[in-house]
Amino acid sequence: MIRLDVLEGADRGHVHEADTAQLLIGRVPEADLQLQDAHLSAEHGLIFREQDHYVYRDLRSTNGSVVARGSERLVLDGEPQREALLQDGDELLLGDPSSPVIVRCSIVVAATPEGDLTVRVLATRALADLGRLTGEVARSGDLAALYRAVRLLGSQPELGAVLEATAQATLALLPRATHVAILLEQGQPGEGRLAPACSRARSGELPADAVAVSRALLRRVLEQRSGVLAAHAAEDLGRSESIMGAAIHSTLAAPLWRGELLVGVIAADNRGASGIFTERDLELLLLLGEPAALALENARLYEQLRVARERAEQENSYLRAREPRPTFEQLIGRSPALQQVLQQVKRVVDTRVTVCIGGETGTGKELIARAIHEQSRRRDKLFVAQNCAALPETLLESELFGHRKGAFTGAEQDKKGLFELADGGTLLLDEIGEMPAPLQAKLLRVLQDGEVRPLGATRSRKVDARIVCATHRNLEEEVKSGRFRQDLYYRLVVFPITMPPLRERVEDIPLLAERFLQRYAAELRKPAPAITPRALERLCAYRWPGNIRELENEMQRLAIMVDEGAPIEAEQLSPAVHGGLLAAPQALPASGTLKLMLDQVERELLLAALANHGHNKTRTAATLGITREGLHKKLARFGL
Image (cartoon, rainbow, N blue to C red):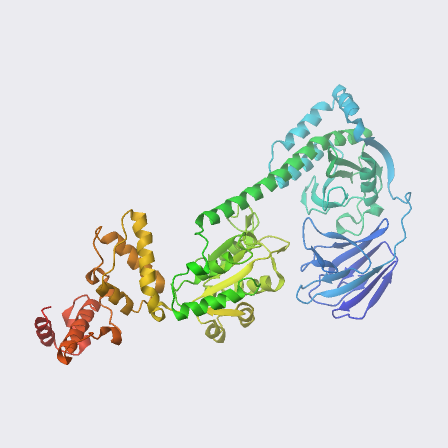
């Protein structure tokens, strides 16, 4: 007997007890346990008794089912996992995962007597008889038909193609067969748990579980390691619209074994009126089972190797692109602004807290994210970065969550998303403020549940990736304007860190400039040039709107342009840097009369203004608020 207590949902408090062989759950009036919640399917799930236990089957519901046992969660939302054995105290979480209907199962089941089978067995053939049967078929006229059927299996490498070929080979070998079902083992090897994998009729393709197979018949096949011919087994097939009213005259079932390894079971039934199967039909199906099992097992191995190769290739591409592991000591700078950031980072390195790194473009947000990863306990796993502004919405979703073959045009094979690649490691979502609104909702669900569902997949996968995000936008302002989800904002901005712009780290500019010159000079295989005091003064006075990235580009250009052995002069700096206005304290001469110091400052300001306007004297004069003739007089006075 089974007792169902509704713990959560519209029918909370309702109790249903039953001692029947099967029990339908859903919104339809004829359901044994009728539930009113709109997010449930009309026929959501089925509980049925099998020998000495109960089984729950999800009936292809829209929002799926979950069997909860303590801290364990078994998601039943598609192939191949649609059934689960129930234990006393299990809870069914039905419908919307965010607010499911919860039903507790209390079970007391009496064992079914061994002889209580609803199949009438007409003949059996053991696997041990295969050698003898091969000789008998060879002496008969059926060898050619068996050969043609086996040829259909061919050399198909993919599991779906092998299943299709096996079903077609069975229909070709057995003229009386009208329907074929193939069930494959699931769960741990040796458990004998089977799940529908393929169904076919002579009229065409069917859903994977459309052709139900008698459970009593399956038990005989597995326990006796034999092919079985039975008659009128429909009563044991369960509640399934695909077989209701079907006139099944006879059924064949044969195990698919590879040595001691069970691969699955292949079954065929006859719903016509042309006579039941014969014992020779049973023998042919048993003989077909051996090459079919080999083809199916090879397809499984091929799939495992393909996925492993794809993962290895993607991991290698990321590993090749990785820079040497940065440490906090290697982050260049001694300014108070940078040291304050490093102190914040050290506090959060080995926590699971989501870090949000803000700051202007080019301030080194990704470098800090890499340092967080490389100094954490996750350092031996992948660090994966994705710029959320670099891809359109559809491609970005596929890149982050992955996709299944055929999920969209061009999806020619399965692809793992970055969340799965970063499992156990760190995922940097750069420019998170640019993420489209639909993807923000999906990202929020990943952060809440720790699960991702690839495009085109029916099941979610658990992932354990440390999330670090970065943005140059003010996310708080983005939330106020409605461009960023408030609930996602609170999930991401748990530990905010703001990278200071380079203009607030003036003390670090000489150190950074020297490091960049050394790096690019080494690539050019020449000594790193020195920087003259006047050029260094200009570098420190410039405001660097592009921050560290702009400084790096400037040093790379200078490393290429400056002759070997010559220093970097101020005039060799780019016009924007060379002409940038000096900060007041650094612009003042160290000594001299007042007139001399004022003349020097005026000369520098004229040079800066000319450089800013590309030495266009008309625009320079207009900017300075003097006439063109007045500008010419000043230039002549200073010898410019």
